[in-house]
Image (cartoon, rainbow, N blue to C red; front, side):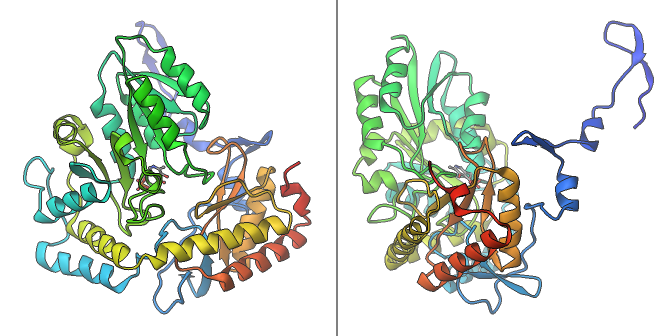
Length: 425
Ligand SMILES: Cc1ncc(COP(=O)(O)O)c(C=O)c1O
């Protein structure tokens, strides 16, 4: 569209800019250097939107990229269930019985018996009275935070929340206060500063998605009791990963009762897409009528819900998957540290190596892929440091870790990046 002479809002004559002009030359400042995606692509350093082509005939932990088999260390399918025969058959059977879509909001024609069953099972998983499902995990957080709050409320949020929680908080009419990441003293100070007539919801993640560290949920629950606040916890990376029943970190720590609203997503351990919140019956009933993305969006398709139900069944029946994932993640952390890498603290399947220089991180990811290994780059400000974010799943064993370490060694040498460039001071 060309800029044209037009009347502006004040009634004057002027040249109006093109709202889409910014799309022509955009980029980001990375480590003091302006990088446009097109320049990164031209330099062979663009690390996004790689296309994978399926799992047919691939050994566990690998995926096709055209005619190359790639060792996948960037996927959040923690229990390795997206290709489990029972999960795939459940999804296929649901398509045969119900068709491919629900074509309607849950409120109207979009509720299937599958949704009702899944919600009952998810509520039981985290020992709450009731649960409701949403189209994505992102939508779940966005809808729930905005839907449960009103003017005069306060959301007291950990500093490192996922974008879906940040956006949900911004959409909410509540006042937002942020406490320093996982800092219970600062959380207490923030709660102390809320006025007595303000109603307060503390918002945190159980496992922080980028850095893989865990929240002090017991401390959070204690402070909530002391200051008469409620707690919303995002267990996106906790469900399936922690707890004797896979109910998440709150289950593992024995603090489920202290979590008033528990959120989970289906795109990680539960081998599907979608999300849920679980709480008391009145809270869920309330959200069913106030959470706009629930009311005004079509319900999850049958295959996605059937996959979740089957994944829950396999998760209960095969706890060894969770155990294997933790064992391999521990082994990987030890091996990386022994080689001098700066691995952030944590006991989760998210194993982040700090790579301070953004361009070095891009190069590392590209060259790793040339060596047949995929891991995710995480750029500031999504995390405090630039990270090579490795995620371990139940598909991996020690031989995969050995291949990853070998590829890392080769690439670091080729790029002449000393390990000390990725080491804590
Ligand atoms: C902590 C956290 N919450 C919510 C989400 C959104 O979940 P989904 O990708 O299933 O929409 C994610 C996704 O990465 C996440 O890491």
